Image 1 (cartoon, rainbow, N blue to C red):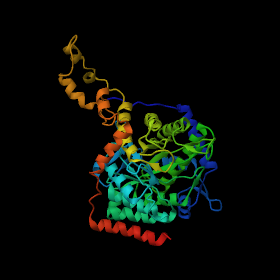
Image 2: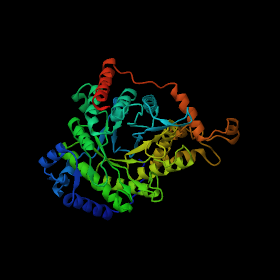
Image 3: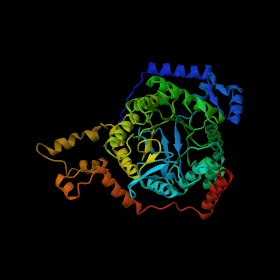
Image 4: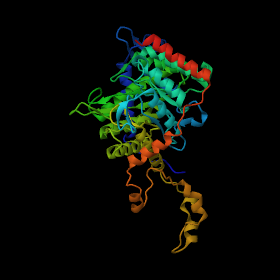
Length: 480
């Protein structure tokens, strides 16, 4: 068996030191939790809760108990079992998810940046359904929905247009109950939802060390319905975290361990994935850089730490770019990041389709990323060495000056070579005769061809009606 290539940024001594400091901060200083029910349940479970300040401290015993009860693997399930997968994968392969919360969209038909809409997001979800190397579809923001319920509208679009597992995060505390009602309407019952969770819940701490009401509500809901949690830390190096890579790794680890401990206090055995999403402040512009060297190194080190110290699967924001076009900069950044982060042990790579900034996506880039992921997956898988692959008999059998084109061994293995259609080279004359098309042009043509076969899921009419009614109820209750 080939062993997936690995890179280690931290020594075992580094990991031990970071872990001890993480526990020290959680047990002596703690984190702030802005949610009354969560405070009640954490106190009942043995955490030290200061009601006046809302600070919560977790003892070493709390941490040890949580690390003992948290599962070391997570099965991610969508609406169709053919899309299920388990992380970590025994073979070492990684999985992928699209970008989240997108408000702007580089529309290849308009040729400019436009607002995301219900229709554009539905098309996106249908495209995800067809792309073989995209495993999870994250929520986006239809800008033609009321802002108070945009997340409810977005989840409804996802549930009706792709059967792949989803990634969900709430936009406000008030919308959280409607998100769970939507999932129940899609699943049919609480029992069915527990048996087949449709998504990953993605609560997010507010760095440094603050856990908001809407994120705690999501965590409590996940515990009620046994929905896997992909908890997220969002520090910005130099702004909302220390100005060093090691300091930001420590802060992320504190916040992720706090999420892990709380998840196990709410529901021992609740599946948990540590999600690493740090950025780096450009002190010249104030921008949060998604793909800088410091950003990549911090994510890789935190991924390695969480895998080793917590023994849980890890998701990292890997398919990120600071360019606003599917250009050479984007290709370079989206090759370097996922390669390093997958080699650091990340199980799920986030961000397919994302362009520069936190709210811009492109369907053309999504298709390019799908093909790029296949190349990276094969590259980091390494080299398998055994009697079959060494092919001693084949080398002797072909003899001096021979060839292997007609050998049965070549036939057995020829389909193992990947040929992603967008990247297959051709001779120069053929490329010129074909119109000198670059990668973006080829991907745009493929996008337009794929659009012809896109369609929503075939769901029972009563299920769609119930889901649409949840959205209407949310609009009536929350939208102005």
